[in-house]
Image 1: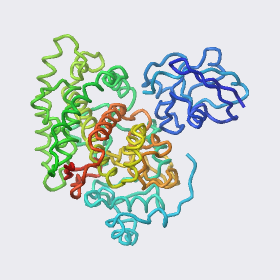
Image 2: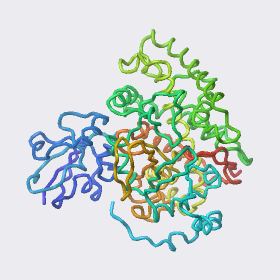
Image 3: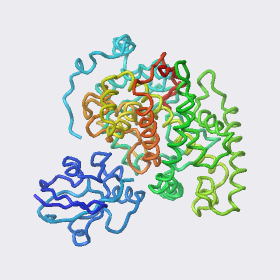
Image 4: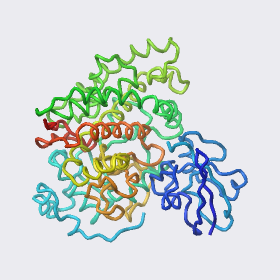
Length: 106
Length: 429
């Protein structure tokens, strides 16, 4: 279990308790967290669950796969802290993590 | 997505008469005789049954006797996703055949970024993608809405007209002319070139190969004139100016310029056009869904995704295996042609609940295959969704009583462009 906080572009925050192994994309869709589309259902294949991971949590979030990096390469507004939420899976190590969603998924 | 249990009897209850009539024949046919590239099954709209059968009996299926040579059909959602996300093993390269089941002609290769592999694909895609950036789309939305309103304002009331010509083609062609800053009075040339670029010369009535190539070169000449005007002027933000000024594309050879133009013309034209036409049919054939949308217009974006799933305006994309690879228990050999049937994956009973039903409030409607997935995913998907959203918002405002469908649509004889040549409709007086 991990408490994850999503901060929207307008500053609104939502905190979810996410079961171990569930992705941050899946949890966001299931709980109506705005700002995440998840068009490909979790295959790192559309880049519509782009989030910015709070710097303190980047290491804990793990490494990007080649596919994730390739998809982020075409996404809008990508920075060094960009990840796809479908490739970050809840675990006790992520408890307290903060991610920011972009103005729109593109 | 989780795999679902399938109740075929329930799923097919109430299927359209033309499918009910063809069902037994399709299931009696030896699998080896099925060719999904046969244009007849696209014109008579029975391809659904063949795909239903392939998904169940042979989801990764080798057609030894395809119309354009042997090929694999990949028909389930999960297998399509596996191919589409594996660009390292499944190539899009034009020189290996490109991205349609029919090989790109060896002697008339049109290099375009959709038919390239990394790294060149990545560089050229990035040169074009700013035209559909969020900021640019916000500007375009105002313009597209004004133009859509003008098109609807001029439609006849109480008489039958062709929705394809008056609405679907006109709207998408105007949008495309805007993106290219193309001479307005000549804009239907874009429609013509788009149609000709994908016209299969083996289908009667279509231009022959030399005729088609001559038409494509006319397109190149026209656009070369625009390039020459813009390359020495200040950048203006239209697509031609962007290509002429971007370091990644400004030194393209003529055929590469033509290739990327054709990609943008077809990508921005045929697809949305056919979703506009398809959407009207689906909505009017499902009065309960139309009523839901009228009662809750905030469903419009979800409805647009459902229209795009249900239509699947490009039926397939093709890849070529770069290595021997196993898929769905079958051995695909290096060099094999692999066709991902998006139109089939979008009706895959294993992952989509009631896939043959059109539902404006479908849960997770965005998770369709129509835009493809992976690095070749449609670059203009947000523009397409925006145009369709505007169309439906304007229809909702103007025609709460609906639009009457006056006859069957004409269908394009193609296993690639899943589209319509005509649709007679009437706006009730």
